[in-house]
Amino acid sequence: MSVAKTAEKPNIDVVCAGIIVADVFLPPIDKLPDEGELIKIDEPAHQVGGCASNTAIALSKLGKKAGIIGMVGSDSIGEQLIELLKNERINTNAVIKTKEASTSQTIIVPVKNQDRRYIHYFGANSEISVADIDNGLHSYTFQNQKKILVFGGYLLMPNIDSKELADFFRKLKDQNYIIILDIAVTNNQTGLSDKIKAVLPFVDYFFPNVDESFQITNLEKPEDQAKCFMDWGVKAIAITCGTEGVFFKDLESVYQIEPYKIDFVDGSGSGDAFTAGMAIGISESWPTLDSLKFGAVLGASVCRGLGCNKTLFSREEALNAMSKIRVRSLA
Image 1 (cartoon, one colour):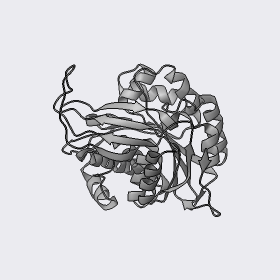
Image 2: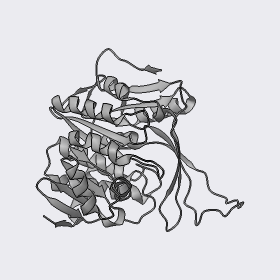
Image 3: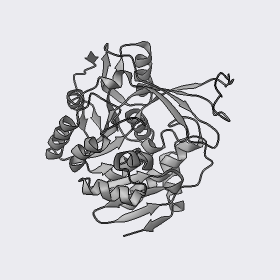
C-alpha cells in the first residue's frame, strides 16, 4: 500500500479520519420490489461518501481547511474518490491506496415513507489500522491552537482494535487534542458495548444516533442512553434522533434541540453534517448551545435532497436559520 507525501505538511483546521466510501444513491422508490419483481428506476447518483468524507466535505464547504485520513483500493473507483475529495478542496495526503481490497461501496435505497436502506461492502475500510491513522495524522499540522480529530465510522473498520484505539486516543489527549467520535453500525454486529466502553474515557464528544445508541446500550430513551455513555466516561454526548431533533448532555447541561423544519427527501449524511457543524463551533469556541443549533440546522439541510452534501446550507444560511431552532433545557 502507498500514501502520498509532500515536502511540507499542509496547515488545516480539522482532521477527519475514518471510512471513505463510494456511494451509489438509487432514486426514491414507492416500495421495495417483491420476490422476483423488477422495478424500473431513473439513473442512480454516484458520490463520495462515508463518515470521514462527508464531514470533511461539509467542513470545506463551510470555510474550514480539512484534511482526511482513510483508505481506498488501488482501483479506478478509489482514484475517482480521491479526485472528488480534492475537487472539494480537501487535503488527501493521508489517503492510503491498498492492493489488499477494492474501494468500499454502499448502495443507498430510499423508500417512500420509510427509512432508507443501506447495502454495504466493507472493502478497503476493513484494512485500515490504528497505526495507519497515527501515521496519517503526522501528515498535517494545525493552523490554530485547537487540534481537532473527528474519527468517523468507528465500528465499520474491523481492523481497528478498540484497545489500540483507546491507547492512541490517550496519547492524543496528552497532546491536547479534542477528539470527536462518530460511529456507524450494522444490524448483526456483536460486542459493541465493549468496543465503545474502551474508548469513551478519552473522547470529548460522542455523536451517535438513537438507533445506534440502542444497539450499543439496549436502552430505548435517549436520556437513558446518554446517561449510560456518560457513565462510561465520555465528556459530552449528542444523540441525533431524526424527527425528534437532538438530545445533548454534558457535565453541566442537558438540552433537547427541536428539529429544524424542512421538506424531507433523504437523511443520508445528516449526522455527518451535524458533526461538521459541531466541529466548527468547537474550533471557534462558540457557546455549546450555538454549536448544537448550527449542527442541527446543517443536519436538516442535507435532508432536503438526495445525497450527503448536495443541499447543505451555506454558512450564512445556517447562521440565519439558527434563530428558528427551539431548545428545551432539561437540567
